[in-house]
Image (spheres, rainbow, N blue to C red):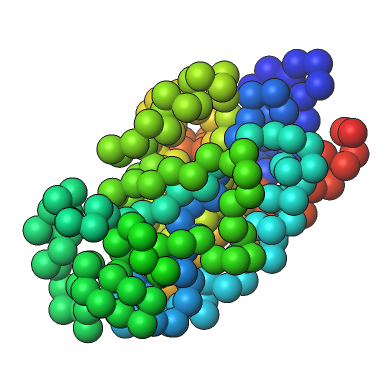
Length: 229
């Protein structure tokens, strides 16, 4: 990446990530109650949702920074239409969960738009002016107008946070990479139900000279911005 006037360089792997604040967006992927809290879709699959909680505080620090600077923030939510017409049987019927997508759970219908579980957790809830993107799949570009939004706002670089690391975060980062966006994934701002998947996904992002993107931390980003400004 070439440095331009006003650009900020963040220590990262495999080498520093340099971004232009005028062309960067923070993407907060699927910090929803259905994934992050007990009684949601994640727990219905047999997962320990507490493993994701460590990503909240560092993500909030980055979110506060972007809000303070007036930089673009995008939140995504995975979920389906109330009539489930956008839900493939292959997704609905896989495995042997205690409840399936669309079934009634403690927070309403699982992974269904309009239910309490579909909402983003209070700690990271969107504020007025931030983009909220509802997606039917794992990647944030599939079946959405995310690319149109980014192009319209002249965004070329993404700071990626969210859950889970190896599913929705990885799908989105790979989709972004194929579309020409440069991505910095913040390792402490993402999480997985499985430590081995978390580690493997981060290693894949930064392998081969950053074949998918860069991996850094919230603290390195905050320090770099503070130093530059």
